[in-house]
Image (tube, rainbow, N blue to C red; front, side, top):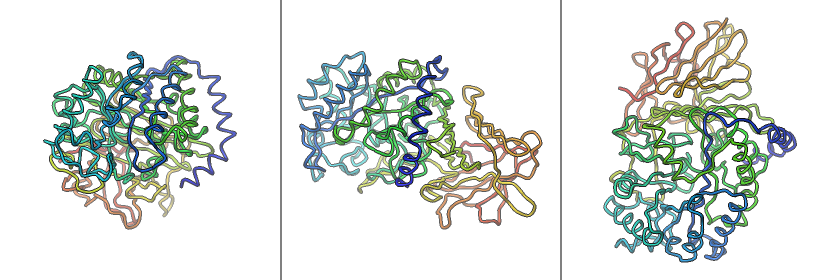
Length: 551
C-alpha cells in the first residue's frame, strides 16, 4: 500500500502543488466559526538504546533545533519530558529559557529505570529505558506502584520547575493513573496514540477518532456518556492521522509525523492535509497535533518540520488556525464542554487523482465513518462507547509486550475487511433481478446544529441525506428515489466479527464478554442470503439507527 501511495503522490505532484498555490492566494478569509486548533508537541527522551548512533548529544541537539525552528516562525508549543530527560540539567536549562506564555513543559509518560528505582520498585528492563509495554509503561505496574511512580515524577518536576505539570501524555495511559494524576495533582490535559493495531505493541482501536474526549473513570480510552462518570481531563488524540489512509492501513503510520516520507515529510501530502484541516467543514472544532519525538533525530525530521511549520504559521496569520499549548487547549475544552462534544473531521477532496471523500463523526455515544470511493458509499466504521466497560488495566497489569484498548464494534471496516480496502455497510439497490451498489456524485457536508452533521449525496433519480446526531443516524431517500434501496453489512471472507444474530429487529453483538445491539427504530433488519451478515431495509424511504449501547 505504501508503494501505491507513493505512486499516487508522484502522479499528483504538479496538480496538488497548483491546487495549493491557488488555495494559498485565496485563503485570506474570515476565521471559521469552528476553531481549528494545532498543538505542536515534541516529547523528549535522554536515552535511546535501540540505535548506538543516537547518542545523548544527538537527542539533545534535536531538541535545540526544534526550539530554533519554532522560534523562527514564532510558534509556541509543548515539550513533554520523559523522566531521564527531566533530570538532565541540559534540558532543564534549555527549556527554562522558553517564554512561559508561548511554551509549556509537561510530562511524557514512559517509565525509565531511574524513575522506577527511585519509586522503590525493582527494574525489569533490559536497558535504562525499555520501550516494551510491560516495562516502560504504566500498564506494566500495579495500581499501588503507579501511584508511587507518579508521586516521584511530580515531586521532582516541581522541584526543578517550581510547579506541577499540567499535561501528561503517552502512547497509552491506564485509567487508574489518569485518575490519580487529576485527583491529586490536577492535570488539565492528556494525550494518547492515534488509533492503530499492533504498531510497536500498542493496539488502540475504536475510540473517539481525533480531537479530544472526556474518558470514563473506569477506562482511559472509552469516552464517558455522563458528567458524573467521566474524568474531567480531555484526552487529545496524537499525531495528526490521515482521515482516509491511516484507517484503511491501521497497522501502518500515515500521519503528520515529519519523519514519514509518504505523509508528514511529503510536501504534497502536507499541503493536502492542512488544506482539508483548515477549510473543510468541521462540527464543533477541528484538532491536529504536529511535532515529533527526539528519538527520530533532527536529520530525519528536519525536512518535514521545515515543510509544516511555515504552513502552520501562515494559517495562523490568516486566522484559520489557533496554535497553542496542550494545557491551553485542555483549559479551553473544559470551559466550553461539560461532556464530550460531537465533532467531525471531513475531507471533500482527496490527495491527487483519488476521488475518495470522507467524514468522521464522533460523539460521547459512538464514532462513525462514511467513505465515498468511485462514486459508491460505505459506512466503514461504527463503534459504540460505554462508560461502564473498564479497560483491561484498571486493576490488572500486562505481562507481555503488548497492550490493548478497545471500544464496542458494530462495523469494523479495517479489522473485518482487507488491508487497504475497508468493508462495512454498502448502500445497495435493486436493478431488475440484480443487487448493485448505489452510484452518485460528490457529497456535501454541512452542520445543522451544535451536535448534528449532514452528508447530502446526489444520486441518479434522487438523493440521500445522512444525518448524524449524538446517539443516532438517519438515512433518508429524497425526491424521486425508488423505494428499492437497502444497507448490507459485508465483511471479508473468514473475518471474525462481533455480530451474533438478528432478533426483534435488532442486530445482537458480543465483544470481549460484553453484549450489546444495534437497533433500527425505522427500517427492518433481516437475515441475508447474498454473503452479507445482514440487511437493513428502509421504512417510507428512511432508516433510523440508534447508536448508543443499550440492552
